[in-house]
Image 1 (cartoon, rainbow, N blue to C red):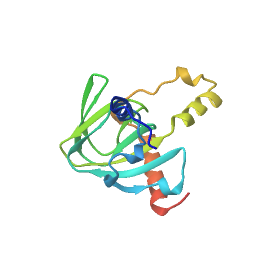
Image 2 (cartoon, helix red, strand yellow; image 1 turned 45 degrees about the vertical axis):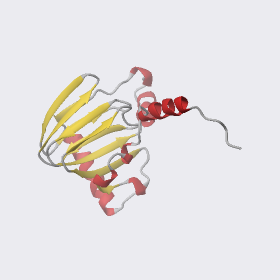
Image 3 (cartoon, rainbow, N blue to C red; image 1 turned 180 degrees about the horizontal axis):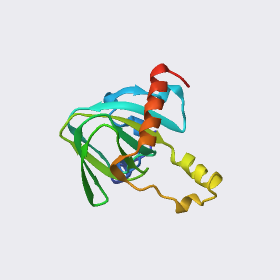
Image 4 (cartoon, one colour; image 1 turned 120 degrees about the horizontal axis):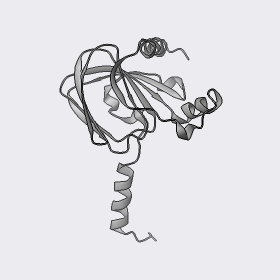
Length: 167
């Protein structure tokens, strides 16, 4: 015998799950060209992606912190928390989206980028064990289009390892 169900409760559950954070690697999977996911680099995944003009909305954000490194020119608009940021992208520019940050992106140009997805628990452990900080008092800040040679270099080295299948 099937249990009775309440359509209102099912609609509420569906609405709540739409606002839940999603796995970063599950977003627009057709855009992935190279991924380290099969290499089991937990707590990190790195992917090279290419996107045709379009948009993406993540009302609950992602479960991971996302670090983007642009590989070419493009234009992107990010809407989050009432803030709208328009970015003219060029190779090497770095952007960061902390986990669970609601966001909507739109872009009218082709985009080529590397994205690193880093588990928040790992950063919490680093804050606690390396810097003796209470992780609840540490928060990453969203930013777009900054030059950061260190992050760009790390992304380049990790992509080479992912392409070679090195673990």
